[in-house]
Image (cartoon, rainbow, N blue to C red; front, side, top):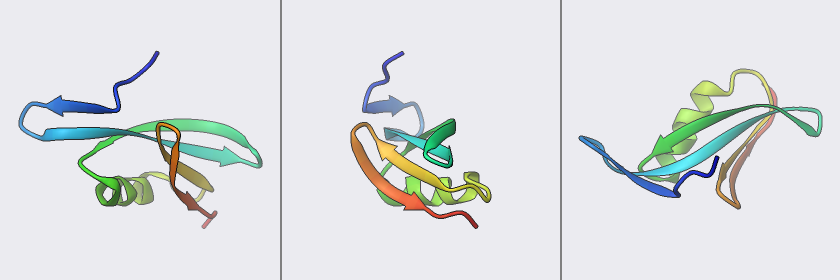
Length: 70
């Protein structure tokens, strides 16, 4: 399924679509969808949701951040 890069969420304004990939070695273990108003908000949400696993936050084809394992 393909998601729009930007959506309008009633009561929240414009939201950008991000995906947080939880990694196991060099393979993706899981993916979490994040809708945020900007990179900073997405980074804060990703930090809370990644747990102790290494992870990468992406906005379509742009890697926003890489998180090391805790």
